Image (cartoon, rainbow, N blue to C red; front, side, top):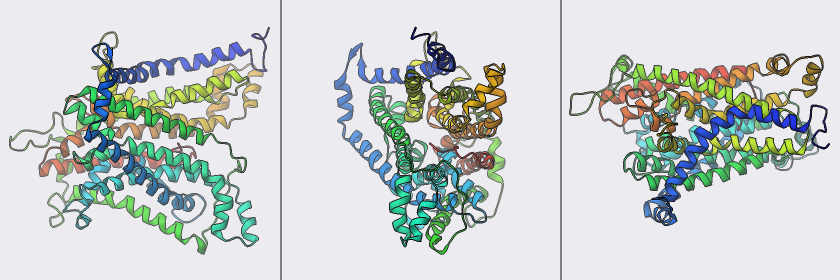
Length: 564
């Protein structure tokens, strides 16, 4: 009789069957294109000739270079995270709690770096800090400090978005009451504001550390062989040294570390804070005491603008600062560069063809991410009417967020060693790269849609169903009118992330059908003035496309976009 008990919305068994139906397609995709590649990668590191080989893993971890790589990954991620939080906190306050002219434009500009292709970020900083660059006199080119600057540039938007969204929803009245009683602004922040913001700050910092630890394009472009993180070391071991066991062993370490950090971030994000108000508070005009946050925001805007400006300037001055302005680099994009000393070409296909491939691949990755993410968002936001349902949804939420905690390089490496035999020989499938990119974008899509769909009053769905509407009609008439703007924003976010994805694509792209980030990396790896100029011009085109997408997303003004 207990199994047949109803809870106002059908039997428990029936509702669990509905959950299974919504989760079926995402579960199959995740199992084939995530669990299988990752488990294959783990097996490659632990199993040798059919036997468990822990000694091989320990040997890899005991190498002096492995120790240096692990230490560089930890300390660079920690320092970059600290700087990103220190700069992002005052900027979040200025952009989300204050009202001033141009605030929305500045906010959109500061969010653009997060979706810029990592290779573009690397090229921009090389142009800025190189010997002939505007800041070349600082001597930072090829140093660890250049890598740290690139990591902060790329991830400070996570802090601004995550903390800013939380700060925007805080009730200002307790702080105003404390100030009226004579408390100083610092005292108000320590005793009233900080306890409410702490979960969002710690969660954002955890995610930034995760992104820094798994950074690929920035470290590879700016660090080369001198500075290597775990992420770039896996790539170098696989592509250059063909030491697959060592690469797999490092992947296991990375997988365990980032998954633990992801679980910690999810737990901190889920910490309830009863003091946080659930209504939005309109921003106020700046006061004299707000000069520091506004100044930090201005410095951040300059920090974001300098590398981009250096990149654009370099692409328009092929002969250096002493030469004239020219569009020669952009006209050369329909060519293939030059091979030094051979009179040949550096690329198999023209840069323009690679751009078309990137756009086509990003479109496929976007609809895949929206389809999977939409199903998951529906699954996670339907009201649980029993403890079993809550547990099932919690497990599924953590399971489908795992792609956020596994690096794209590890995923691409897993694709190479598992999807190469029938019936899953997909190496030549045109959908392989879009699927990999969709998995990278999937957590961002889910995190965009879940808060919106979770805010829909469930009584409206029940009313529609009582009037005879089926599940599809209820979805169209109740959920879609609320979610269509966030859905478009999630699509734009997925498109921008997919367009610049480099980690997994660098493993999977065929030489005759590369994406634009892969072509840019190949150009900067082939010395020659024309190659450098084409790399900068292609980077400007790619950065401009992603920036345009992000500006459109910001106009949709969905608070959850980018909040991890």
